[in-house]
Amino acid sequence: MSAKKLKGVSTFAPLSSEPAGFVERVKAWAETHTHHIAVAVIVVLVILLGLWGTEAYRNSKEKNARAAYAQLSQGWPKQENFDPKIWEKMIPELEKYIGEHQGTAPALDAQMDLASAYFHTQRYEDALKWEKKILENVPSDDGLRFLATYRMALTYEALGRTDEAIAQWTALKTEGSSGFSREMYWHLGRLYAKKNDHARAIEQYEEALQSTGAYPDSALLQDELSSLKLKAGTGHESSRAEAPKEKP
Image (cartoon, rainbow, N blue to C red; front, top):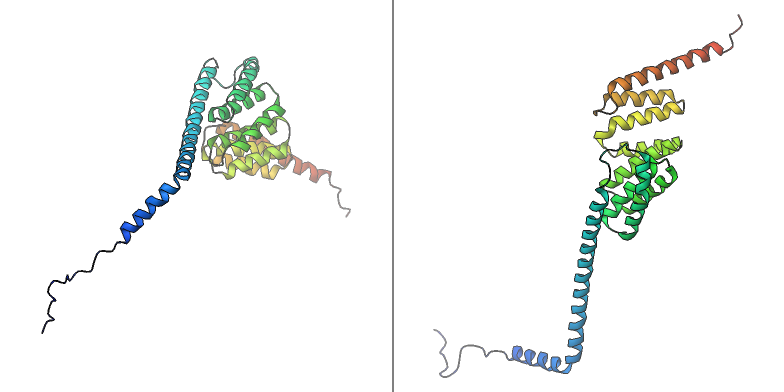
């Protein structure tokens, strides 16, 4: 038998007055702390405006740097091996540009150009200084890092610092840049030959011949390898000839 409903009594629970009380307390707190709220809002707005202004300034700086770099490079020759006198003329222009646009991506490209200018004017120590600066400032996944390391290997070779050049070419080889493998092995072969380490030099030349790439061509590699093997064989034979004979 179902329970009887009491006449005049609602079967629903009364609505809680807590939300209304909470709203009233918030309003009261806001009225009491109006000054603090206004200060907080102003601080947030200042931070947001500061972030926006910094980003806008950075974008503007990069844009101006790109435009100036494009204008600077318009008068440069299109080929790599042009007159050293032209490279010499470019040096002060690049130094000025780098100073005016320091911290931008185009300025890093200009540093690479400056290192090349010093290299082609045979100011190898200056070239090495800028190559090291680039490596200090670019992230590990930036393509400019590979180019700077490549240039540094050539600079060490030009300075006659064979062991350091070998270290740079080896570092490039381990990065897996297959398009440059043939050239890297070739440089390593020549450097090991310079150290009279004929066995390792021959190994590098043979690796170069098996690698893909157009530079240096196979004819040059074969010619230098044959010459190297001849030297290695002659040295071996001469050392045997010069050795004292055993008495019977």
